[in-house]
Length: 332
Image 1 (tube, one colour):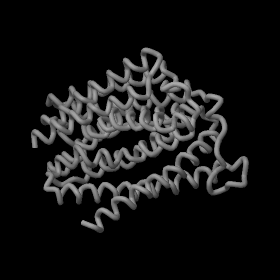
Image 2: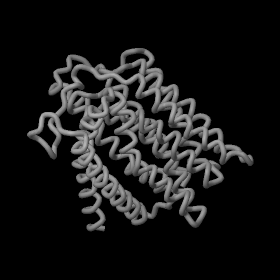
Image 3: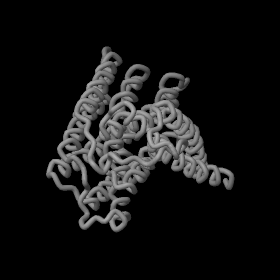
């Protein structure tokens, strides 16, 4: 148990430090590719940090030998969006609250493009509702519908790149960490740092998940419970760490774009894999995760649609994750 706890904390620290390098590198990669800051957060950063949870789903549904193993993949595909829609947004709100004085903010308002984020929530909710509805029925052509989810993500990426922009305070970048004395590092150096950081994030995330599963076993939790409650929290840790780093720099637009982009990946790519390789049928806890995620997104959509979001309101959405935990524990 002691070794498990040591590896648990060491892997969490490694993820945070690697995310520092990843965020720094991906910003320079985006500049080298002439992308706007919002596209860097919602496309480049989101795709990189979504790899751990996508890998969990891929390995479970493609190479899983038993229905229980495949269920782990489906659980990861449903648990990831739930964690992002509740805990990740709450982390941004909490970080803004803690850093308010250091960022010299005279209010609790979140400085973001409300119209863009409102549109993203609406698009995610539309895709996610279809994803949940498909888990309630069985029919022959369901696996083929996975292609539509891949197409939906491709359209999202195209739209994000087309509409990307950069605010004045996002234009200034910290020096590339592996080339600190070079004011204009090449795309190759930025790409190398990003890939190395991503490799560390992937390895540390895998180690973190393993320790969480070991802790769940020691606590007597079932694999299904671990898949729904613990693994998604672990695999979404990179997005959460990125959000903390960007908020600390006063770049909450990038933090929320990263979370929004990762949510769209979670709504499409793992779902497509699940439909290709599993029956994609939901039991009570999976359906509950879908309903609560939808409620969280609807709440966020209303917040952003108003055009003014208080950071404390983002913290409040984490209460829905507490509701889900209480439901799953009560049903186990």
